[in-house]
Image (cartoon, rainbow, N blue to C red; front, top):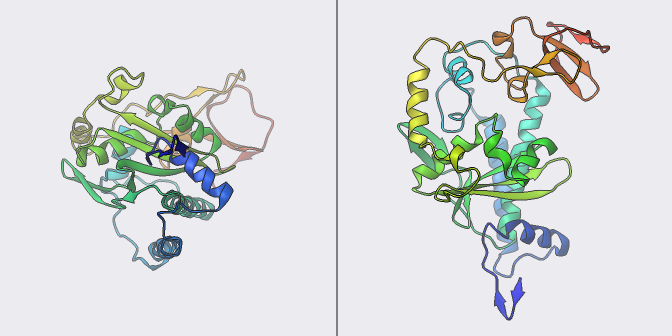
Length: 300
């Protein structure tokens, strides 16, 4: 962008508009070696495929990592202690791979637009727990995310801190803490329509509406979780079931509906096959007029 002959500095504040301009013009920033970035993108995709199809299967995936430290206490206890969870369906693995490919593409587009991407997959450590950050964009610790339209809205309007069922906040706070940084953010894409946004929080902004949610030191969370997983399973549910409209039925919250341990917490859970996807009902007062998915069925 030009203003009175001065080029606007490349920051996370203008990374989305610069990517949009790139996609419209197909002209990379003058500072960019296009062929080099294309090669780097290709190598990144090859590395993803090697990870997917060339790795040895890990025998034990129960360890704590900074990527899951923000998940709820009950989830982490079950994960760490080897509670049997539901089988991950093949289409879910496809969805995961698609998300990784989108993230690699967004990093490529960020570089093509002239923004710096550094510290990719840098090792981070907090209180002995290890993780790998996605990257820094223009010096800011950044997670790159693909999201549904519902999830994207929380990045777009900044409300993620108030509704974070997958623990993204604590995850990136841990990466930032490891780097001695107070600012962090997410470059997110709505995978249904290509909309982009960049959400940034600053732990030093005490006047921000989200400050009270963000201010707890991440070291306290990590210490709590390390002790938690060695104790008996927490009795409290991660979130309470919520009303299903005016039907009188109760359904799982979003976070619980995606959890692999939901059958462990709710052994009498009933699943109904709505056109937009399965609905998980904890208490049925009025029987839904759709087909019920029985426990032995697969692929929903």
